Image (cartoon, rainbow, N blue to C red; front, side, top):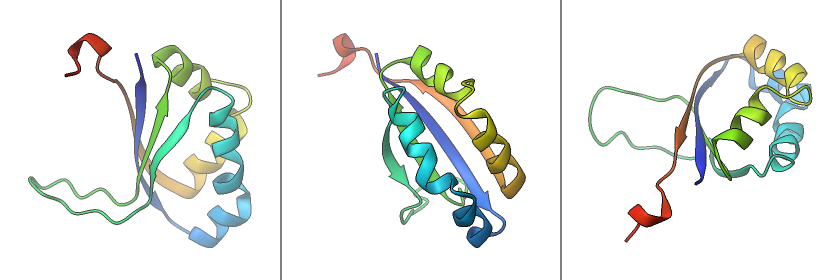
Length: 103
C-alpha cells in the first residue's frame, strides 16, 4: 500500500536553498526509493480551519518501509541536514488506502 510524505516547508533563504542543490538532488534520491513527487510548492487554498501551510511537498512511496528507508538513508542524510538548516519544516508520513478500501 502506498505511503505519502507530507511536508510543510518554510524556506528562510530560497536562493541558498536552490544553491545548495537540494531542489535538484533530493528528487533523484527519493526516486531511488520509489518516491514520486505529487506536489511541490504549488498554489494552495485553505478551504477550512486555521492551518496555513507555507510550501507543501507531497511525495508518494510504494509503502511505508520505502518512505522510512528514504528518510533514514545515508544518501539523504546530508541533504536532510541542509534542509533542516535552511528551512522550518514539518514532516509527516501517512499510509495510503489499501486497494480493498478503494471504490
